[in-house]
Amino acid sequence: MLSFGEAPTPKRKTGKERKKKKTVTRLLDFPFRPTLTAVSCVLCLAAQSCKAPRNISQSFEQRVTGNTDSELLTGPSTLPNMKAINKAVLVCKLFGYILRVYVSFFTRNTKPHRLASDAPSAGADADVESKTPKRNIVVVGAGFAGYHAARIIACDLQADSPFEVVVIEPNSHFNFTWVLPRFCVVENHEDKAFIPYGPYLNGARATWVQGKVASVDKESVTLGSGEVIPYEYLVIATGSGADDSLPSRVGETSKIKGVKLMQAMQQRIKASKKLVVVGGGAAGVELATDAKSLYPEKSVTLIHSRSSVLHRFGPEMQAAGMKALTDLGVEVILNDRLIGQDEATGVATLKSGKTVEYDYVVCYFSSSVSAVKG
Ligand SMILES: Cc1cc2nc3c(=O)[nH]c(=O)nc-3n(C[C@H](O)[C@H](O)[C@H](O)COP(=O)(O)OP(=O)(O)OC[C@H]3O[C@@H](n4cnc5c(N)ncnc54)[C@H](O)[C@@H]3O)c2cc1C
Ligand SMILES: NC(=O)c1ccc[n+]([C@@H]2O[C@H](COP(=O)([O-])OP(=O)(O)OC[C@H]3O[C@@H](n4cnc5c(N)ncnc54)[C@H](OP(=O)(O)O)[C@@H]3O)[C@@H](O)[C@H]2O)c1
Image (cartoon, rainbow, N blue to C red; front, side):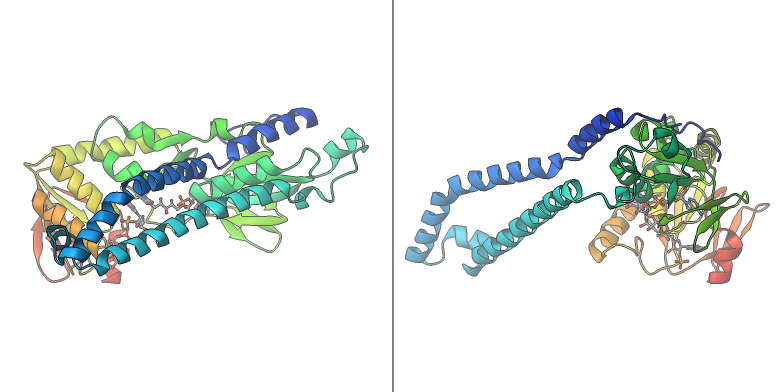
């Protein structure tokens, strides 16, 4: 197996060391955040109950005098009841969530470890254990979901477990996709989009393979390189997929190449006067608004196939996105598709027959796929 660029090369640890580490990991896994949320929630409730006498006197005043100023401001008298009910529902939801987190934390840490059940007996010769081939739990993709799954499983394996986690991921670094659209516009931050996988899995029972899974069958996965990796359990965490290039995905597996691509896009955007952005999903909207905010003098046009931008989000978000775009002065063309670009004349053609002048088009879809869809 290949080792994973800058990713960890896990050292084998003794049983004692592993147990010590597991205790630390379990402590780190303790749901501190929900605990803090619970504490702050209780404090909020306490603070609100201190205000209660004022509310009571207000409602008494309302009852005695009929419509008061405060009622005019807060609406009809049924509204406070609705507010209280909504608040109670919210609090119940919050405590339900916190309870669920606690239950899952305690069951995870108290249930018997199934993965260790058929491990060699305590007195077994260590040599025998090291010679027994490991049974693989293969995790395909180390994005948000896959990395977290691999970490939880690998850190939970007992010292004598016959299992080993094998993570298969093409990228040398964790690609923090959330910042890509912005860092394609704003200079000098691009390296922050690439987070080394390294330190967080050190010592855990995980082997890293840098590669892309090309096919899966009942017992093994095959990489693009032809390497076959057998598995007993398989976690597929390859994400929902997005077209493979900036500003939505890096499109290169190494950090150095990824950084260069982002720097090149920043420079092209900086140099352009008539920027066209294709696709009004979240990535396109982020990029178009960032470009127009940073360079207000440029003409920025966003072309989107749907009837509203941010179509994957709710109507309020769509309206807010559209308002932000128009307030900034981005020209938005909806219900249309870019179907061609003439590099010589700098004219882009849309499905409706409309034309748009450009000197740089940001489009992460292959134009043939885009055009065929239209
Ligand atoms: C540009 C962008 C910005 C975003 N911004 C936000 C935001 O601000 N807030 C928010 O909540 N969400 C945001 N999202 C959505 C969020 O990133 C996704 O919901 C999240 O990444 C899904 O996590 P995942 O682990 O399922 O998939 P991914 O993060 O996509 O991870 C999949 C992993 O699988 C690997 N992989 C794929 N195919 C293979 C294969 N064949 N073999 C091996 N490995 C493979 C990939 O290299 C990748 O590392 C954004 C998404 C994008 C694209
Ligand atoms: N802040 C955030 O939460 C955030 C930020 C970025 C991304 N994301 C998520 O990441 C995923 C990918 O987002 P994304 O913005 O990259 O993609 P997206 O949501 O799929 O939006 C891209 C849009 O571009 C349109 N399009 C494609 N070719 C076109 C053409 N030639 N002319 C006009 N329009 C064209 C597509 O239309 P068709 O569908 O009609 O082909 C699609 O609606 C999504 O799940 C998104 O929610 C989230």
